[in-house]
Length: 204
Length: 331
Figure 1 (cartoon, rainbow over the protein chains, first blue to last red):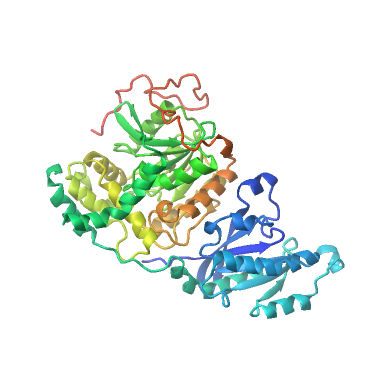
Figure 2 (cartoon, rainbow over the protein chains, first blue to last red):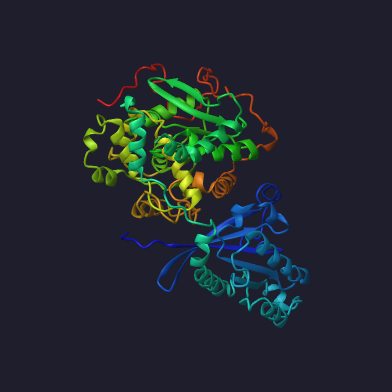
C-alpha cells in the first residue's frame, strides 16, 4: 500500500495506414496484424502508462478478436492528409470500433483524430483541409483534432498528452463494466478447508 | 454438507472437464522419472518448434495453463510444454533437475513463461544456463525471496509442517474478497489444483520461497524479456514487481489492466495474444500446418527416449548425467 499504482491506459490506433509502427511485414500480417508500444507519461502527478495498440490497417482489425480492444480507454483515428481515401474511410473505422469494442456509452467514448504526414512535400500534396477535418470532428460529438507528423515529430507529444488525459477521464467508468457484475466470493477459504477436511480427514 | 461442497466445486470441475474433453479420453499428461525427481507435464504442438515452457507458481500445477495449450498449440501451432514444479528444495537442485528434465525430453533451446514462483525459477535457470534460455516472459514475479522468508516466521519448520497448514498458508496468499466472475473462476480452479498437491510438493515449494535466494545478472538481453504483470492486484507486492522492472529496464512491458493472480486463466485471450507477440518478436515461428486436431503423438516427450544424439555442444556439461541417483534432498 506504500506505493501508488501506476495507471495503465489502453489506446487503440485505427486508420488506413499503421501509425506507430508504420511498417508490418507480410509475414506479420498473416499471423497477428497488431502490435503495441508503451509510453510513460506524467499527467497531473499521476504516473500513466499508455499501451498503444496499432493495427496493420486493412480489415485485420476484425479478425483480432476481443482481446485486442477489450478495456480500451481511447480510440485514436488516423488519416493521411495527403490521401483522400484515408479520410473517407474514417467513418468506417469509427463505426467499426464502436461495433467491435461495444463501449457502454458510444456517444461519450473518447476518440481523437490525427491528421498525419503534414510534413510531406511542404504541404503541397495535401488534399484534406484542416477545416474539412474539423467539420468531421464536430459532426462526431466534437472529437479533438491534431495535425501531426510522426516522421518529423511535430505535435506528437501534444497529441499523446491529450490522448492520455482523455483516456484517464474515461478510465474509471469503463473498467468494471467490461466484465459485468461483481461476484461475491462464495465462501471464505477457511470455510472451504473445514468442509474439505471434514470429508477427507482420513488423509490427514 | 456434501451438497454445499458440490455446488461450490461445480465451476472448477467444469473447467477441468472441458479440458479433459478437449484432449480426448486418453490422458495426455506425461510423467518422467529423472533421478530422484518425478516430473509431471503436458507437451503439445509441433516438435520442430522451439518450445514455450510454462512454469506455474506456488499454488499451480501443469494444468493451470490449459488455456494456453488449447489455443497456442492446438490452434496457432506453437509447441507448449507445461510442467509441475517437482519436489526441489533449493535452487541448485532446481537448476540441475530442470536441465536433466530438458535433456530427457530432448529439448535444447527454450522460451520460458513463468508466473509468480515460476517466474523466479525461470530467471534462475536463465542465469545459470544462459545458452539454453532464449527468452523470458515474466508475470507477477520477483527477483529475491528474502521478503517472503522475513514474513514467514515458521519458515524453519516448513519441511515438517502438516499438509493442512501448508495448504492454508498457500491459500491465504490468494487475494480474497469480491471478484468479477472470470477472476473468481480462476481462483477456484487454482484452489482445486492445490488440493491435488502432496505434502512434499507443498513443503518444497514453500521452502523454496523462503530459501533466501536471489536472481543475479542475466546474460540475456532485455529485448528478449517481456514483463506481463497484471495492474489490478496480485499476491506479489508491488515493490517486488517494481524491483524486477528496474532490473530489466529495456524489457517489453505487456501489462494487463486486470486479471488478478492468474491472468492465464482469467484473461486467456489477452495473455495468449501477448505470448504470441513475444514469440514473434524473439523469432519463434508457429507451424499451423503441423497442428493435428487430436494429437496422436502424446508420447512424444516420453522419458525413455534416448537423447544423446543431439546433445547441445554449446551447453555446459551435465556433470551428474551418468549418475541419476546422485540428486539428494537438502541435508
